[in-house]
Image (cartoon, rainbow, N blue to C red):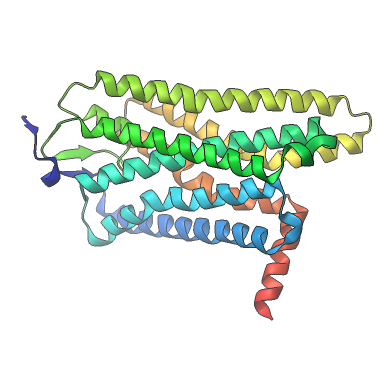
Length: 310
């Protein structure tokens, strides 16, 4: 097939998780309920943190930013998927696809960087508790979030511009429920060597680098906890990290699972199904993980509900 140079008129077909018509209502119901739970849960986290003065600390500042990013992350993919199922259409325009890629990469990288910043926050809190308030001052916290945004925006812009240089054949089918960068590059009719180079370099730098930083932080945290003499002190120190460690493990393990499943089966639909874990399930679970094991968050949520009923 000849490459289509008129990209403005180009359309793609999102094949979704399943092409079976009978399964579509079930998928619609599951994803709609998951999306609503994600929106409601993360909005509650943000409202609870902003309304409770006791939660105006670096850890909860980063958590509120993470909740906001999770809302944006899921809003990038799920509404379009629900609309396509509702209208029984699989079409997504070229402009919509590029826009979706841009915001998907933006919020995915931002998620990773914020989790890394939160790991550093826990490192300072446990390993240097006497200097915590001095080191993690409001200026530094704001700067760390700002730098995370700048890195994410620049990387997302670069990746999107790299896709714009590609030529695509007509009637392109994407075996996914959103425009995923790797699939887009694979479906291009033009040379993709530069795209693959930039994409894998960015993946190593912005996924591997933060992961290494998180590992270093937690290795020092574990070492510091082991030096605490009392069992109660060890439990108290470790309990402040459990929620964050759970989310990090969930996020990176699901991403690794997607990579391994796609590499092992070479089945695009299997990869799409596996990617539901880190694009849909993880953002939905974050509020539950942080609220169920956190007494301060439980108190703030209870106060928020009481205030709403007055």
